[in-house]
Length: 134
Image 1 (cartoon, rainbow, N blue to C red):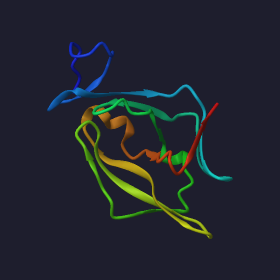
Image 2: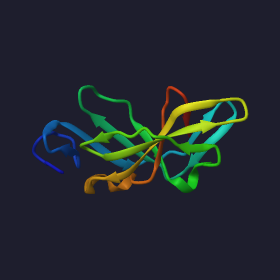
Image 3: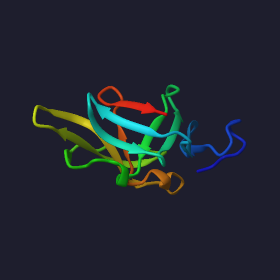
């Protein structure tokens, strides 16, 4: 839901139940690369950058189009979450010959109307995956 008068942030999307919880979604002008060690998980010129303010000011999250992600080693697990600003997620584990990394990424399978740009895009947990921009 957009509320132009609540913040000074243009085009912010607000949580209907808590107007101090808001975000912006924009196309990133950068080229993004996601990798673990030398294994490339994604690379994109068309990533989306999401910035959110809630209980904290969160670091930006980069969402990769599915076509730009190497999905051969990613497998959906049973974890899911819900965000009133974005919608419902499922999580992905990464399987390699050497290891399994749990909850390495997530996907918003169902979004609220205002967050539809990130629907079915993949975001990586930056505590487990390196994101590099150029």
